[in-house]
Image 1 (spheres, rainbow, N blue to C red):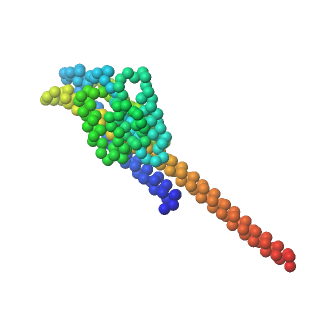
Image 2 (cartoon, rainbow, N blue to C red):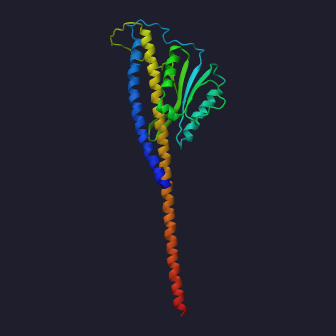
Length: 266
């Protein structure tokens, strides 16, 4: 198979992956929206007596940063942004809290880093990341962290990819923006336990959304690079064709000139 055909295949697969990742992200976004509405109604509904310590954490507890990289080719610039943030976080002298890390992707540096709780290949994460979801579940129930951040490249559309460091815990400030709560419901048992389960679901959905839009970002970047490569290949082929035509024309002219010289010598 020629180089051009290989690049075409890579380009096509990248487009397919972008579409698949976008659909998955939209699915989890819908679930996350429902979950956040439920949390918002529980936390801010005046009809519910809620233990205010239900979501309180120790301000001195460690921070958990989740770094999402790419194992695909042609994505070195995207990985460089994640690695740069990882270095900044590691050397942040103003942050007094201990920093724990979940690293996704073999191209995200893990040399001499402290407190790496998990490091998985991107392919392994995409195949099965139950272990990481369960770690989030256990950490929230144990109130292990005071803050959780996701560091990744966010895909918006074919022309816009943004590097993000997104705080998903504590809950974003948009919770509690409603002024009226008309929903009326009853719950048997401890409402705090339900709230905790919902918050865990919310965090897991946020990770799902980030991982999928990051995968879309990787592939749209890869698709753009391969598209540019195909243009370069076409330009080189056109130039080679022009050179070939020019050489053929020179040969024909030389042949005509040689024949003319022979005729004039008789």
